[in-house]
Image 1 (cartoon, rainbow, N blue to C red):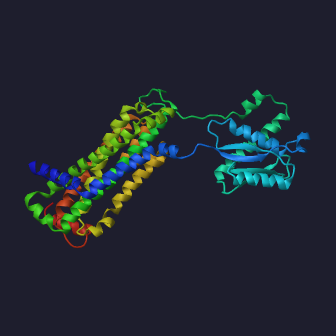
Image 2 (image 1 turned 180 degrees about the vertical axis):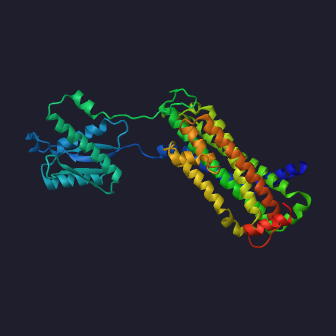
Image 3 (image 1 turned 180 degrees about the horizontal axis):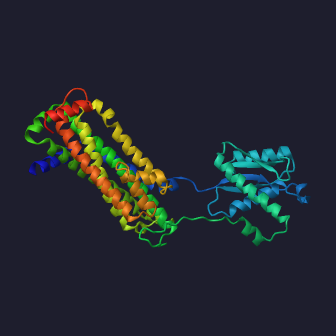
Length: 438
């Protein structure tokens, strides 16, 4: 047992002293800090001032007309955006010069002087309502044009309703949007309990997504490091010295457990960095404003997250160790571990897809496939009501598969570390295992 902990300690010291590990960890902490504070920084460095859109007031001729004139539409656009809490546009009236040439020059002067960011003209489009054309020294995005179109459509509808004699209250009721919210109801214990809110659902969605991402990155990163270290030791012939003092089985599980501690430490540091940044006053107030509270996330979600995280890690770690022992050159490692990477990616993508379709048939089936269970079943627990018996079966299947893969990887490792040259085929590996009586 002392040799096992010696291998664990050596693996940890060797990894945390590596410059690549320290630099990559610091870079990840910096990236997390920037990402968490990015909305605040954008808000501070960006201007909240809306774009000023100039439009002409009524001409002498228009003042005597009762129809929908360009100036009336401009006034309505101004009123429409002024009612918004954070308007993107502010319509500014420009005095009409009663001359097309003078009006155009007046608008161009206001644009060049910086008094306005753009100006709007209204043209006949064959209907009773004029079409708006924006003139600016930049091209407005499709989103901006869609916002303008929505405003114009609202104004056009208002004019049409006025002709029907509807009151202001009736128009308001007609324009009010229908609301659809989604609330999770827990029926896993045979009783329906509606204790969720839409804020709690949002917090749960974010937590499940984050945990899926952490699981994916940890398995991918740690597994690759385990396989790389084993292959590097083989290629440098260090393995021949190690196996004379430490059994291959102790080496494999010592490296796996050592890398697990390193990975957990790095993950804890990254989570701590995110927590510290989220606890800053400006970020905390922003989360409170949108109703996100960590206390809204049920405790069992975190418990299941830890369970699936631990079992899923050791399942893939043993496989990466077994595959790494079969490769003699680090340049051949990428091709060897590619099937494991695809399995990991498949589980992650199923989990991400299931966030919006947790009850899809293939997601339910995938949650019982061991290599996808850590992602799919955990996602189902967070995003829907899963019967306890389904969770227990998936955990049991995952545990059994992990033990079987660990046993098989141990046999492969004990044989693979002694095989050099090209990567052995399955037939050659079986012969070697028989020769070594494994």
